[in-house]
Length: 304
Image 1 (cartoon, rainbow, N blue to C red):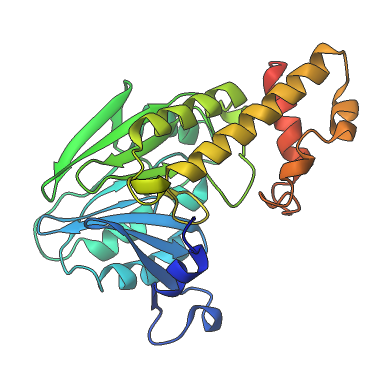
Image 2: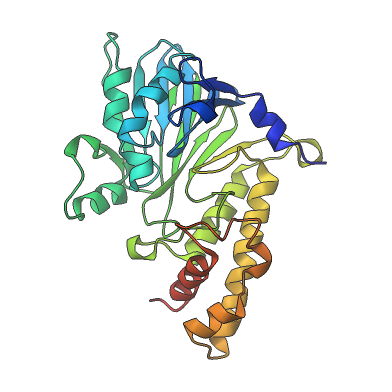
């Protein structure tokens, strides 16, 4: 039987002075993921933090105005300086807090923190009009399929997921702790957001989920094992990624069959190929509805 997720979250630490999350919208919840890695939950989504004697690394530091509360939460875990910020893609809820967190977390210990990302993140930022402030641009980019570094006795590996959520997605694997930060390649609280205009695709998304599943190893009866920290949503394990991959594959195949039958986008939407997943993946969200998701799958399959 799967663990009660609400009970797990109820045991998390609430950080925002001494008030509860419901009383302070900028509160950060701290949830131990595994090993020396923590999941910090805020208004901008999830930030993953690895701590230790060498300092700390933060993955996806949310928004600029989230940085003070995020830093206050991190200081309950470590007094060491920040060493790196890793950005999984260029969307503002994952990027814009980078410079502010580095400024707050550098401390007096000599350190040269950097913002790390795939080169396509930098190219997307350079193509924006107007571009974001230069201090949030990643200066430590990688160009191939992966990049790694070593911190706090642990290998940290960045893998590029081409043409998934965007064309610059990275997943971040903390090997000793056995924790993966997925960014928005996996978001169990919503349908996959396929950003076609910025290089995303349904096939690349499925490939990325399958890659994550090659890294994850479940424990007994699918409970425990590798922890998966999504860009948004609950702390997960392999089984949630399997269910998400299966849903996306099934919807992809349904939409492809309707396209093969010659149906237009309007006809495909009317057929409601994702209707049985609408409730589970909150298809009535204002920012990403079921119809938006199905349209993205349709356009991706047609190469539009």
